Image (cartoon, rainbow, N blue to C red):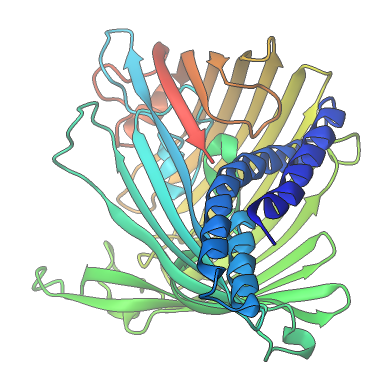
Length: 496
């Protein structure tokens, strides 16, 4: 097998993929478009790998001239092919956003999807034209395939975020957010475990899912631990099982001595079940001795355990009305599980805390060049941080885009949030409305689909809210941030 022989099948595959892409360019299904975009990226990467693979094959042939057996040559060439196909070797993925958010006085403004008072309890709002930060993730992957067919995947993810516009940030938040190894296709695994993979380390759970336009996960499971994916319990039923650990650090344990603190581990035991398009997730959470935490008031105790559950449906159409997709999820939690999205991340919840949340979003094309993505996210909770407190909020969001040329589109976003927040005895209680309208001229190397990146956009946003919300605290009510104002800016967003 020579280098030209190796490269020819890959070239044919690339050409065939190109024909398939051309034939589906007019499709309006966002799922299909996302797959096509991913395929295009893989083709480009394969073309680059093919050049390297050709050089390696030539080297292998040269070494084979009297120094390697035929079997050794074939083994080396097989390894080259696996690397060229992406089954083995190094790869790099990234997400990043960065831009300016300026007020009418040309000064930076508070912003972000959790800018409202309800943001303190997870009440996200529309993010277009509302982000003042620079945030970047760099993901390094190395994949291996062994002679017995087993596969290994090693991943490290670095991330950093800041709100300063300076080129050098003295307050860097650089973190190693993921470090794990995952093994799959293990020959020793049979029966229900035949297609299962095992992992250990620090990671984001593989099956987290979100509403991108709100920058809010439906559910976010992450930490350090171990698990197993894709256990086939029945023909249409597969399940994931995991144990994640998180840390509650330096919480006060004495009123008389406020400097006396303690630490504990938050442990999340998860069973994630999939039957067809349905998902049922169950989480048990514990944190030994967290009930010794000193709370702000008297008469209630911090939770040291809890549970959370979620029922979700992943639709392959736009609510049955046309091409597209949708997702809907209902979540409920008690005790430590009352933080229903960021599982196990909040130790300041009371033992009586309860929360219920619903999330819905969908994507579709209205015509060949207009696409739309509505979303709803709402939550109600009681006895969350203090006995008698209550937090209710609901967000409606609509992202609309008009694809004008192959490199330019106009994006529009309307976002509304209602909130009724009562911190209980001794705390603030406010209710009111918040709203934002954004227009964003957007440039892309190629438009088409909800997930096509990178993009560079300018934007103008008008934001207003009820005056009563300024009494809640936080940035609302600060000088220059009292509602009824315009903001302007530019931003880039990248992922691959």
